[in-house]
Length: 161
View (cartoon, rainbow, N blue to C red):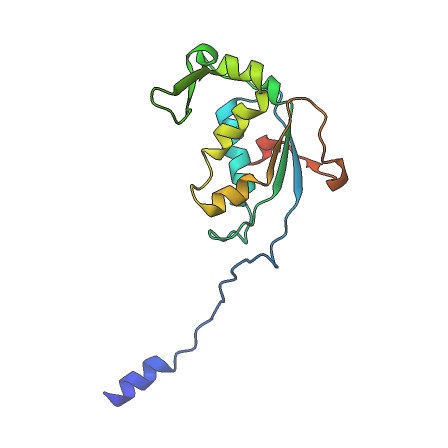
C-alpha cells in the first residue's frame, strides 16, 4: 500500500500558472466607433464587450481590463421595425405619481447620445465594477469629439464576434 501511494505522488505533470490581470498589468487602449447606420442593440452589445474586455486573452472578471470607447454619430443610429414610436423609456421623479414615459423618437430629438448610453449601461454589470466600466465610455451625437489627444484607433465592429 505504501508503494502505491508514493507512485502516485511522484508523477511528473506539466504545471501552468493562471495569470490574473490587475490594474498594473492591464493594457487599455482608446477605440473609436462610428455608429452611423448601425442597429442599436447590436452596436450596444459589441461596445459592452469592448468596455468589459471580454475579447482579450487576459480577461479577468473582477478587474476593469476593457478599453476606453469613443462613439461618434449617435444621432444616426437605427432601430428596426416600429421601435421609434413603440419603444418607451421609463423614469421616476421620486414623487407619488411621478412616473414619466419617453419614446425613442423623443429621446433622439432631446439627447441622441442618451439612447446609446442607456442601452450600453444596461448590458454592463450592476455593481461598482459596472459603474467604473461605464466611465470608460464617451458618446457624441455628431462626428466631432473631445478625445483627439488620446488618439483613438478607429475600429470596425463587424470584425468582432
